[in-house]
Length: 364
Ligand code: ADE
Image (cartoon, rainbow, N blue to C red):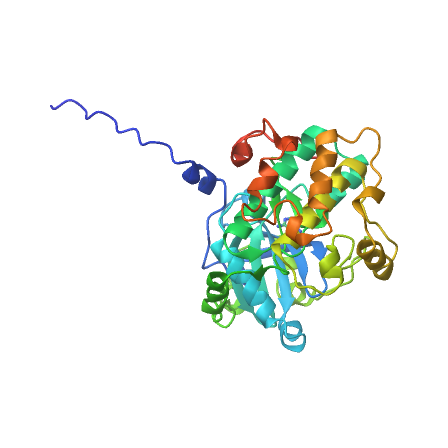
């Protein structure tokens, strides 16, 4: 017998470690393999539903859970929403980062298009801030560090996120922050535009599941009751019932409020608003109506922004650098991009790329 060969210990590739933190792609997953639960959120054109991936012979408790964004075909057609869904699918397909709620599958079924996304069980950052009043510096640094890393990955891929706000930052079971809802994402580079047009067939080719084929599958009785026609009918859009202002203008940068398109600089402004909100409990330019918010934003001067006495000094410096009314001089919008934000003293001592491998603060 020859001696066992010396074990080859491969050099750990940090990218592999990050990859393993994101769920696997399931290109064949269809409507018929999902059981839908309650509504997790509603947008202007879509509803996000909690769903489980049925695994026959296993208890429901072990079925993987997903968040499924459901968009009716009528909405897609009538609202000219096809390009938007196409962009969302395109950006999610190319983005593989632990700070992005991953697209696991996408398909069409009957009257709807469905995006199956990684589920974040601890809800969104808005609810987290609301539950606690405001966040402490440790949580803010950790979660905003993760958001900065995720946003940087979006920018590096050539996209603008377009709708950064605490409602769109999701927290996982382990307490890590992920960007959800890429409905406002736009390509910012020629390469990204090509990626979007290359996926122009994405929706047309979304796999069409046939529910009837699977009707004979033995499901636990209570699950059988919930499926079928009713399930599809109940996927229609509904208004938000938690009183939040839909499509709030509070996070818009001044140039966007004046009509400029979404941009990397706009994402940086929204990051500044979000960091302020973590510390204070509300966004810096809070207003009762969209019009009032726009007025406040357009007339904003950094010197007028009030900071509570206990606001971290480095945090204040970072917020003011991100809330620079001049997009050309805003932190994160220069040639080094969000690297400038990562290097800010507010994040000193924090290994931002490593955060997703570290223990996260406990979400409420
Ligand atoms: N609400 C919207 N998207 C979600 C997700 N991916 N996980 C949990 N809740 C959500």
